[in-house]
Image (tube, rainbow, N blue to C red; front, top):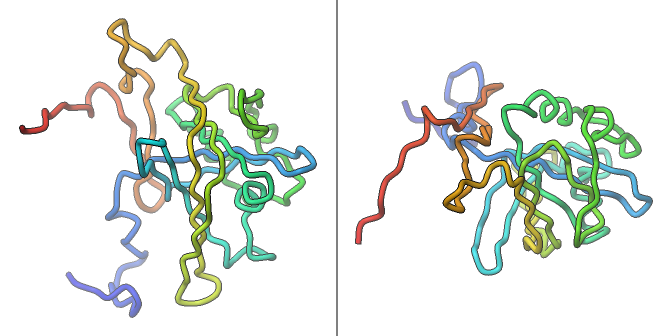
Length: 207
């Protein structure tokens, strides 16, 4: 089949685009506003974009928000800080629960029965139950225009200035044991995937 996204002429029950760029890592972004209220939300438009300095990005829809802003984005642009927590099989239900749209004054960390702990270098909290935390300093925002105002997205870039790794997931050889960590990723629709010993394979780069 062939279709043009702007014409929405795929003829399918749901837009297939999110089922084509897969799997997508989940940036479980924690932040705080200037009054100290915590916010937590998962973003599957998330990835690492550079090594030196290590930099990550995530994007969220802003056109549908009442003031044109997601809580995470509002907090990060106001405070200049956030934490990316890695979502795993063990935290899948809490991750999903934290995706609920709530008023800014609601704390998704508490409502998802998770534990907020202090970061070393930023004011945003970390999620104790996550095996990896990336403490980030806000770098810049890039607006992605939508076909309509409601379709607008904003991309947030952050420099990773501190990294926490649970020692249980570091092997005797000094490698991160991804299979043991059971990281999850987003597919299309309501589907997810899990990295484990059965799905992991190795290829050596040529040259």
